Image (cartoon, rainbow, N blue to C red; front, side, top):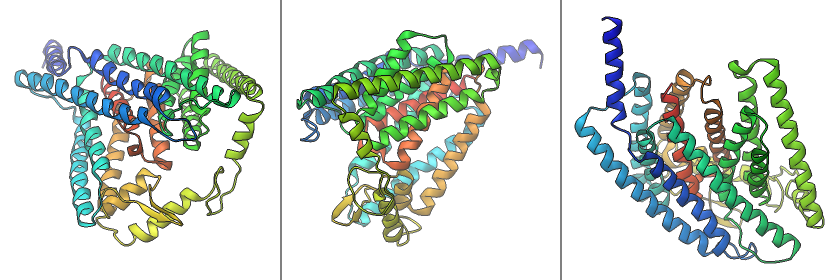
Length: 435
């Protein structure tokens, strides 16, 4: 085959794949991001005060979010079916193992549902979110038209989250300084704020010094960290360190000038963030630092002692292993599995991977491990940081936050977090596949 014939074949395959893309993919992805940000806004406007717990904002936001998700499913499905009627779907060879194990996961989801019914569990919400994100990831992957759509959509998402994070900062400062009872986020929405912070951090570290990026970073990280939620702070720090390490070990950026600039920018961000925290602490009459000191009173004993990094999660995991996994090692107990710890009944397991093992047994765990390995191999083979470095590193940073959070929590507790994670994974697969 001559070079010209190979080039024509390559163009033909590209055109076939291009037909699978939605003509309004940018609008559709931004529509999903807008609905997610709207939930945060509704929580800040309609939720009860921090002393009274979550309220109408979270409830209404979840309803709107699910409705928007199904609109996306309907429109995307129609366009993809239309494209499929004209041209066949071409699957990248390196992606076939990933697709195979992805299909196997669907079987595991069904088996977990059967086990739940046999054990008289009520896993409707967990199973529904599993199936929704299972459909969302490939639809986002197939519906995105080009890399520019990914850039614009993520910038749009970061800007929306900046506005929401700023409102959260204002509400928290009002609660601390004026003893008001202003609404705040549900406990897990700040994780979504961290997605915007991570994307903004990657752009800041890979570009020239920009005052707006610094302000945006302060607002996003400040709006998330001021909630004093331990998983939020853990995930935020984990994601920031991950991004820093990726840039340090990026082969394209090994020159001394870039590394010096990277370290200088990192030091600048830390300095400004520390100054910002001290100013807030002064405004709040030292209540901020007192809160953090109380929150991180290091005590790893297996007890329920509020306001510290104690052994509560370790106790939950230990109880799950001894009472659930060892008693149902092969097939698990089914979706919706919870544990009883001390005086608390039906406690979430607070670790997605342990929850997966408890729900689907070692058979489900084996399939999940193979899927993760296939996903990792695909990323390693296809990931090219020579182009679009900031957006790729930013998405990898978001993926690291998803993994970090699922080590200490379960995304099903917050539908907006589940759907945000699915969108990010779909966009990451798409931008990697363009390599």
